[in-house]
Length: 321
Image 1 (spheres, rainbow, N blue to C red):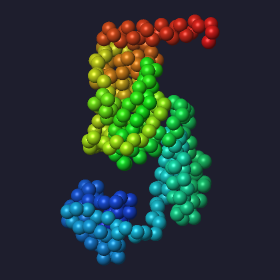
Image 2 (tube, helix red, strand yellow):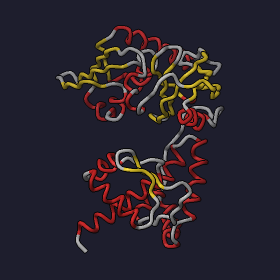
Image 3 (tube, one colour):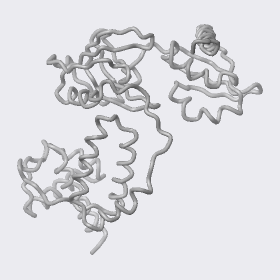
Image 4 (spheres, helix red, strand yellow):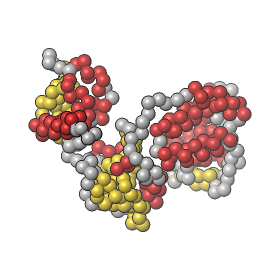
């Protein structure tokens, strides 16, 4: 049995998995995924049809399995089973509580179709994987927020939010959700705000109330990453002179806060940022290493840092705390 034949078997099996998991699969997408010609995909589809798989559709449009057709459970490789265990541990710690419960029941169903040897593998290894030092931030007052957001995206219906901003001011927003993402210990909604007429990010722990309305979306949206760069306020340039010995500790966070340039000098590392969070996020991040940094520009950041440190000092001196 030559390598080309084995590759075809693997590819045809993978195409069948795609057909099982999606309502419609385009030949062009399959060709790009498996890095073959569209003509090869046509031949693979024909191979599946000859094997008795009831495929609906034709070249040029898309393919799907006949409605109601079910295949026996897919057999997983040992590597795939191990990846499920790792993913389950991550979901238990990193997912929003409302999603975590659904994922747990989904994993129970998945375990039920595994071979006995794979079930034994899970039992022997699942206690050897864990995620430490994870402390999710925010309240749990709206536990079903993420599922409601995803449902609104699927149905293309607007959401109405009672939202508490960074300054504690509460506003009512109607939004068209593009997606959700998790970053730096918080869950966010990326959405088009119908009031601001622009894309915005909303921290889920600041949502006091959420309702899915019957108002349809006003426009089409692409992928979430198509909009994240524009989903904020006007950027402001910030320049810091940072002590070299602390720079290594900022390797993960500096990009998040908009690092655009880094230049080593005799006095330290000059770091340039483009940030939209000059009022809140950036100053609170900077205060964590402020004794190793000098603000070169802008002046407004210096004033905000002084105000922030003054508030911290007052808290420390407050005898009633």
